[in-house]
Image (cartoon, rainbow, N blue to C red; front, side, top):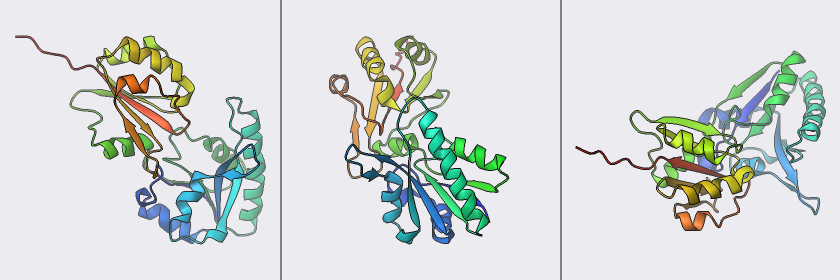
Length: 238
């Protein structure tokens, strides 16, 4: 018996891979990360995706992931879950732990799989579609072209770093955009010639795509948002 990290894609249930869907149907237990509201109710985008698929809902279990830059409480929650998973594996169960997007791409659950490996519990990973790839497809954006380079930032950046990257032929993807709202607003004001593509709730019914710079500097970016910044177009002379 083993534990499988199953990537669910960005939100649209139809963007899950055939391999991931088959695994969800075959495992005994499915753990989905969730956050708790002020009212004490759980919200889980992973669960919402699975409930739209031909998968037995009674296999789903929600585990609470505290949302904080201080990872102490989140890691404590993962430690507790690892012990629960180990007990289920000892019972002969095959367990799935889900992640939105791709589980190897800025997924906080990787800490848990390192711990499971240290406990000598067999693990495997099923890849998924990252949100920024789905975002480009949604808007018909050719994310990188010819000799352009792509860099993905995790929401910790500065206007100076963004300037350096856009002037050295880099296309920038900013994940966890809510963590650097002021920085991005400042950069947009300072560099109106760059090309901005803002996405919110990619792969869901509330999906948004915005390119207007004046509108972008007024948006307080939520958690499920990202931005793709393309360098200003250069005009060749002669």
